[in-house]
Image (cartoon, rainbow over all chains, first blue to last red):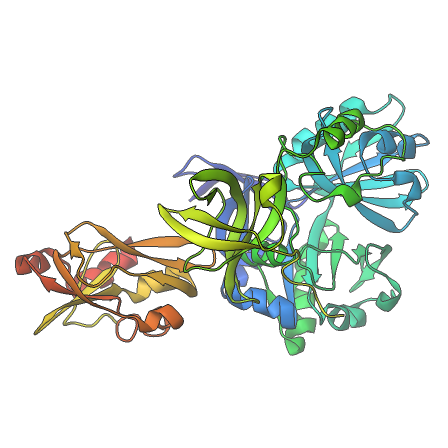
Length: 383
Length: 126
């Protein structure tokens, strides 16, 4: 039972009577229920964890396509003459090299060089940027960005102005092209266009969190439901299915993509997380740069590795890792991989235990499971 | 839907008394909640178990579910086919997806369990 529904540009806030929880709803909430979504709370949002089943949805994305609602993510607009310089000093990647209609993967780092959040920066113009952040951190990220911004810069939390649909899988382009005049094959990975899908204005970006080809579509909240239905219709003959957060997690883990709160947190720096490629030390000073320099000189305290389970069982987040009686690390994310048909995961271990083929044991509910360090990513698409 | 000759626990396990022991598994309700089963952990043959004990786990991609026994005795057989084909738990939860066979030490424990009609009601309201 629910009470006190407030509608704000298509994003509703619902208080659940029995649990006294307050959950946000995306503009696609009704669509999820129509599609048979199993709804669970996630970062304060009522989200579909699955529809037909996590494994089915996962396999569909790898072989055909899946449609995800990720409208719970946040968007911050940064605009004005000093926008590039500001973002250059705020984030570790090189904003000066980011051309209009391109996006790049970056982060907000603390002065200690550790993660406040990971994010994408879209450059819409010389002085116009859209920063896309994780749902769990929207308010704190916006606060961080706004606090550090010069007076005359525009910094706006525009999260409630966007619904976000992710169409992911090898069939994504074939499904989407008939619905838009934008020539999709001209949009390369991490590029975007402002266009229309089914007549609805959309930022069409060739990005995603699954390791497959695909598009993320930023649309107005009132256009989300119609777009969702139109995509499902268009994709019906291609094997498109709605996909939930459960499959989103197994897909990104196979592709070895980091998840904030697991591989990334405020005690972890980019060197440890294997994200040195997002840090451009010669892009001028940025928050955390000095700490990262010192950390590089000092050597890493831990290293992120991928592992496959060799014994029988599934290692999950939080499981401790041992070599003989020494505790050498902890699992950050673990699951059964539908594509590789084995249990695998990522973990932080002492640097001397991080070499490929290293064998260790994972404590799973009191039982030791044999595992081995493998190369990341676990899965890479063929095209 | 729920075989009439079986008995059922609140933890969604079923129990079928045979000549030489009691077979148990998880119900259709439970397998549906879990999703596609990818791993099953079963006790060793010969293990002594008591009513209320956790005797194994059934895992889907995103969840680990404990299996509890409502009966006491000795494990005399386990369904080792599930090691390579855990999906049997989804496909035939009341038959080929059985988990464990127990030689009962206290047969009267079965009487305290729900029958198929009570269990059907339990799952529609619970």
